[in-house]
Image 1 (tube, rainbow, N blue to C red):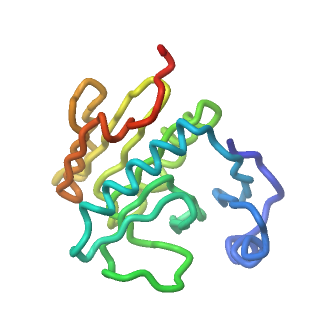
Image 2: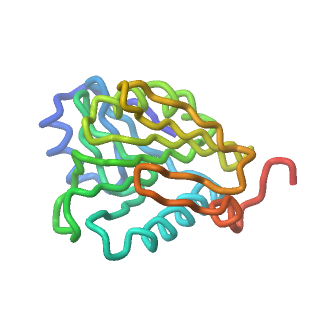
Length: 186
């Protein structure tokens, strides 16, 4: 969950956040403290990051989960999972500017923000090819893919047996995506 703090500039935010023990997002001049998620939320993030990471071995792409920032036109955000194909090895950078794939695992209190505001901000990135929203409680999966016309095509993969991530040519069984995760119905 995000809790708004004081207004500041992007430069002020970057300098300030370097000294903070917890993560914060910065969007439209406002700073938001990022509050921890649930075990279900975290389990899906780890499932995705580990399996996507295995898929990306020996490619020029890397996967990051939760603690790597993405700089957008209006701020700095922390996606749950992202893939960048800018270079094959990680260094000391703290911010990514060229993600190809971003996945947000929805949390009840922030899902409107993830579905609307974050997606609008992420779409300003020329490198972004796919945006995925996963609701771990309901096991709902929506994949937005940038098509040649410049439009974003929504594919509801909720009932599919496989999560298809065209931007990185990856197919993951939904069983593995939700491994170790109870649904709301259980």
